[in-house]
Image 1 (cartoon, rainbow, N blue to C red):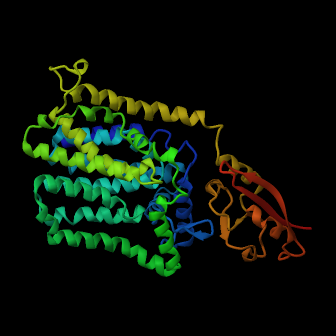
Image 2 (image 1 turned 90 degrees about the horizontal axis):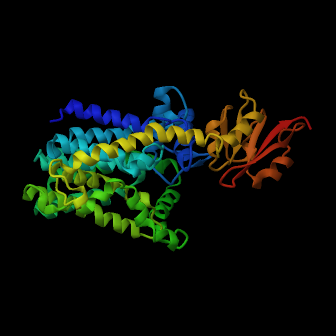
Image 3 (image 1 turned 90 degrees about the vertical axis):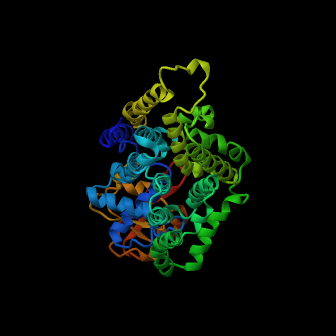
Length: 476
């Protein structure tokens, strides 16, 4: 039997082998800059309430991921890709540790370890967990809530523990991405209460206190945020974020029809074993009820969320938690009906497949990502723009950015970057500044530095076809 310490060591070693190699070798991509640049701005200004991208307030997402990046930069004393992505990989680790500690009483030593390994080695978590994106944080917080509630429910712990503590993680989930994770969490709760016919526990006073705690955590940030910004604009933005996915502008049939297949890819390679599970092979009625509840809490939410017009495959990632639990429960109980070519009565299925699949994931981390970093070294999309800017702007000068929108290359600038909303806000001592093309003629015609004048010295266009123009203010 695996001891708790041995399980923790196994999980820690597997996590380190998959998630740490070459973590800081790949340049930032996608939306990572929207998580990093507001964090830098927070550290520079001391304003941790209103996240900002460029010179504008960022209304689309709550700031928890920005806070964690800022904390990582402060803790490590460095700003680079590794320290930016550290919060994501640590969140992934936290869930794996929760499986082998909190869930051990329900899944057992072997089952909880297998659940942690499945969590660490599925395609979805390997992809998202190595990026400083909202998914790793948001899915991990939802997973922690699910693990705590389900474990303590199964172990018949105090209702005050079971129905309050998980809602702390749900409250933090609101600060990561809003309330969408409640769909997945309550799908698990309602499915288990339905299977066990214990609906009355849903109305325990502790549950209502838990909901209050969750809302209070979100309100502690949301109320001052709305007071410091234009409240009506904030609410309109959040409404568009929530409901805008069903509008024509977001809907593309060719993308929508493939959403479920793409979502299922995230559950590989462990998804291959799910059709082999047989509920009648679990040892007792309680396990069968739990297995059915896990299946109901995973499959319908994945299908329903994926069928929403404009939904992305990553939206269903919180389903990973019941999927990992059901898979681990099935492996631990050997509740499979494998095809004849996989049948060996002398060894259970888990002893033949878990090791090789985990080994494959480790190979991806230890060998695959370093090789990918080498292959992409000369195909950079963000650093190449920053390199041109760094060659033109002395490191000791301040680079002013005039209403720049989202420009991820600022993360790699050697010179300090300062943001202003209008050309008129540039100080008299300005030497270098960047504008977007719609402000180019205004910059050329500006007389605010007379007798000095501004002239353009560099025009760069990035992979998104976004163009910025670098100006220097000097003698006419």
